[in-house]
Length: 146
Image (tube, rainbow, N blue to C red; front, side, top):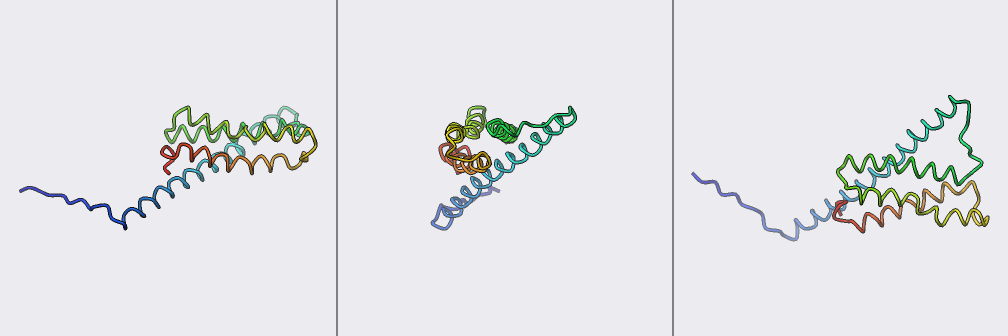
């Protein structure tokens, strides 16, 4: 007895389903990375501040550049851990981590020229990171599921 398996031909009805699935996979991956960034920032940033407190010191928040660099680093660590866990190669992982620091290239001079305020630096940095991540993901759409 032979079994014949039928495959469904690709129709106009199955194509949109696949496209929707790819878009959802891409978006889910983006959200996972954002969550990993914030977990890294909370866990590692909290650990740094906890260790400093145990040592009788504080994080020097009077230096907004240092605070921004620390935030970008802790977010990058969280994202790198998650991306490596998900099987991404080092090239794309480090490329995405670099995106966390790219806004600072523009923002630090604006801070020093007093075009932006010290208190708004972190918020602007966060806002700039998200679309930059999206653009990097679009560049490697096949890897991120788009």
